[in-house]
Length: 246
Image (cartoon, rainbow, N blue to C red; front, side, top):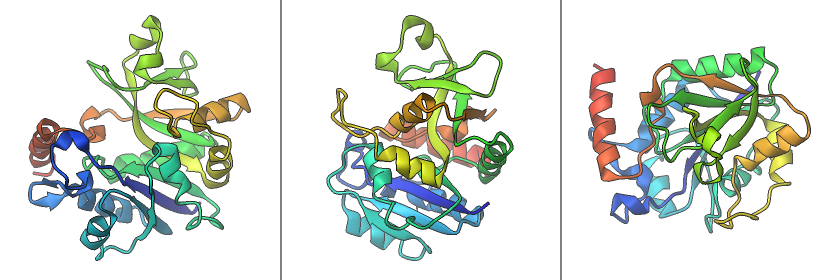
């Protein structure tokens, strides 16, 4: 099955305390986005679409040596809105779309290959990469049908019930979708939420409502799904990279 990849790299990264686009902050002398693009190209995709926004020209220049196309997200109205910008590039694409974050440099190509294989084997329309965290505070929780690979819902912490908050399995923000269903579902999401943004996770709600099969695939290495939002998290990622790559 053909594969295309969308990498979200439009964010400002306010909490990084710098005007530099978040994906251009360096971990061990390399911009975060390079790790994610190296991983993407290792999967031999048909196309990689890089979603750029904040200081788009800088990000474009920094990634010019990579064989990727870019799509501009301006203004930035949420993760769902980011993915909508890739539709023109992927209009006639038939296959699976893998969605990655430009600020999550530790994810392993082998894990992603396993995620895609699992997605196919289960004939899912969407599969989310998950991990169990000792402290899941702040992450969206993945609620499964008991004892199965099927996802019933993904709930943001602020919307979670006390029972749901006790769940330690979290949404990594890395997904595989059937391309046609992804873009069809994106047309149905709204900004009817506290942030007034288009949430990519609302696509899952649309899949659930139409009875489509959504799965979860859990990595046994929670470190690889760490996203970087603060200087402290950047330092921690550098430390983990040195451990894992040596």
